[in-house]
Image 1 (spheres, one colour):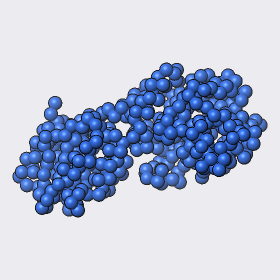
Image 2: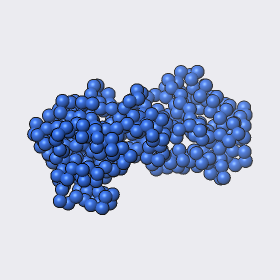
Image 3: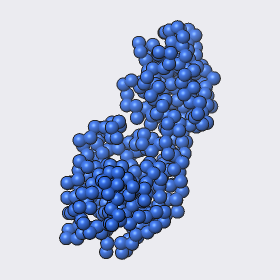
Amino acid sequence: MNVTHDIKYIGVNDHTIDLFEGQYDVPNGMAYNSYVILDEKIAVMDSIDQNFGDEWLGNLAAALGERKPDYLVVHHMEPDHSANIDRFMKAYPEAVVVSSAKAFAMMKNFFGTDYAQRRIVVGEKDTLSLGRHTLTFIAAPMVHWPEVMVSYDDCDKVLFSADGFGKFGALDVQEDWACEARRYYIGIVGKYGPQVQALLKKAAGLDIEIIAPLHGPVLRENLSYYINLYDIWSSYRVESEGVMIAYTSVYGNTRKAVELLAQKLREKGCPKVAVADLARDDMAEAVEDAFRYGKLVLATTTYNADIFPFMKEFIHHLTERNFQNRTVAFVENGSWAPMAAKVMKGMFEKSKNLTFTDTTVKIMSALSGESLAQIDALADELTAE
């Protein structure tokens, strides 16, 4: 695939993977992106996952023809992008690796060498001239590892964005970009919103026509759409109006309360009601929806003088990603000493800018007239202007 006349795509699609980073379900696989810039000097932009080294080196050789690469630019040292660095350096013994100082320290850890005799260390605003193309490097620490850089090609106006603007899914599968990019961003990068904001501010001064990420499609049109979503996600703003209900239920009574609340919210004109059974549904998608919508309802049982394990895990996923700027409501169920609402609220004690509803639904084993009235009140509160 030609990204531009001089920039070729040499990445691969992975349809053998089941869990990305050992935890994220990827039914449509993953793309590990790599690029080569063909100029007076040739730069290869990142390597790929260890399982696809032969295919990657074959793609590179096909793009090079009779030529040899001069540089391997390493933006990010996570193994899905760096695992074949040593193979590349052995295959092309005259090539030089270009990366940040912190990345070279990581290479020493991964490969036992930091390529001291074959390297160029670059930092903020350093440049690498290839001929017509000049790469300018921009530090992007903690987006989402400390060594990360992005680079900008001033000739073709391409931003090589590392894991930024990436998504789950192989490139030979058609799917909505925002859904899987949101799940990818919030799951993997979401903790580092301030760092992403800092990078977006730097990128705002560049004339970008193409974004070339390390996962997902090359972005060419309507770049403002993608950049705006990243701005929303990284500033923890509400993307869509609606209510997300996350629940666990042991014997079905909490589920009945959730189903009734969802029905009443829809009847009252709530623009979107998303419901997730945390014991059965994909946890990453539930986390995604909690960050997408402006209001969150958490419904669970008191369990071992605490809360049900799946709910506890879910709230940990939220708080470790700096969940904020939302309205939160609680539905608790307990047969003799309900305390789930208190425990859940306590887990958010360090979270910023959360508003808790006045109404908490309290179920004593099964729905009663009192708890049904509380569900009505909560539905009214959540849909009030």
